[in-house]
Length: 248
Image (cartoon, rainbow, N blue to C red):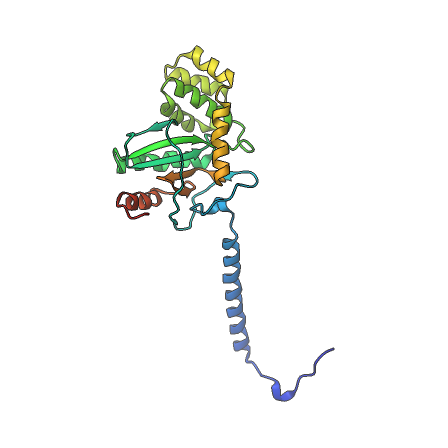
């Protein structure tokens, strides 16, 4: 039932006042919408993993994230995995990566070298595998090839060559890189054909997923997580605080 309007209760608006109210309402709605959208953003867009659950659904590539770091430290094993840098370095960066992921390549091309140059002798890089097999058909085979190169103490040279040729991934490339690096061709090819590292790579994947990692690249700086191909400054912020002993 409609309610009649009493003439004494009516208010007259000027047209300019009416438009002003509309503008304010539109602005408020925009702010609220932005809050809801960003507040519900998937974890793959967040800079730091906070109390991660077991991952649900497929993992995805992560572009550079935008949120400020929150310092939660995780226990991330790193001994026994491919690494470079001093074994007693005060900073250990564990990267969960995918050789076919463009954001992983971006980190390799733009940030990794800057970090090593800025902190000489202070960083130990550790590589762990997280191939996104649902979207990258060569991610797992390239991971296997890198482990076969690791057998001949050539992981990092092979790692660099794969990223340099990310648009050409395939068996022919894997064999060519091995030849270019003067690896024992027969041993390398036998390793590649044997599938001997499938379980090792799967264990890396299972560890990452069980921890809650949902995207590549994901990094742990002394256990402090950063997600995405973030710029040098994002890493520097955490490393400097860590070296200064300012993070619990």
